[in-house]
Length: 348
Picture 1 (tube, helix red, strand yellow):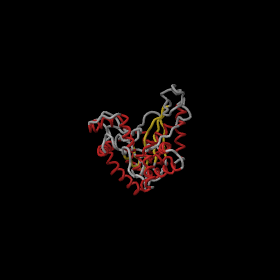
Picture 2 (spheres, rainbow, N blue to C red):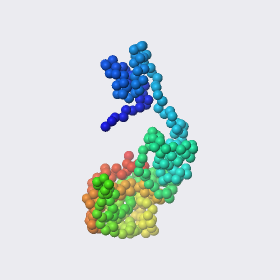
Picture 3 (spheres, rainbow, N blue to C red):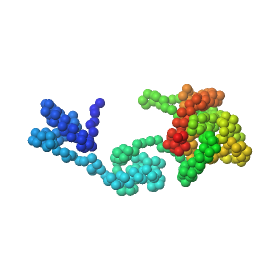
């Protein structure tokens, strides 16, 4: 494997001075100037200039100036333009700026440069700029288009801090709750196969499915209940009863605005048990703000590791086994709160 040396124009002055001295030492030791230049990754003329200066006036006569084009010169965009583009990438979406793209990819940035400065830049060059600016390609986080940013901001800055403060006063445990479903034929992982061939997997009946409602606290507690069919007010109340039966003291439950959570039946039941339970609702269309969503992702990513189940009974057993394992892993549960979107409610 051939090693590519870094461009010496990007090296610091101290490193360059060390290279000059090593080059002179190598020539004095019998190496040719051409060999020294090749090993150090500099031009032969540069080594020759160093040697001439040294033999004429000693080390003090070594030239300190740089030859060749300085790093950064000849680039299409100025530093000011680069800073402006980065500010747009950090604060705006393509749609905000009239760019037809779902995320900031190289094509979208190319179109942005054309729109802002009238410059037509090759895709590869755009990629070089992004790399130089410190941007890397990542799988985008998702949020609903209907999400209200003002509602989210109010939740993060006012609503949740007030809930957290009240929980401390009342010594209540906050449980973040959500529902999910696991299908027997769903497998999100990858499989190896020969080049040019596809990995295959035998799947069971696509109608085999089990649903679950769960709740987690930022101290690692877990509660869950599996069920068939859809979530209803009665099922949600059954889960709340389970929480009251297994968690001492007051409980604050945070859920989304699913219709089963917001019915008058639920509101009446909660009011009847207000001495022990209160229910709060996340901003609409904001699942990424609920740490229990990350438990759901963990469940779906691991429940079928041993193969796809053939029956609903086996599927339910798999889900319950995974969840019972989580009961013994509070630190793992607490790791769901480390996601950047969830850090606002993590334990101190």
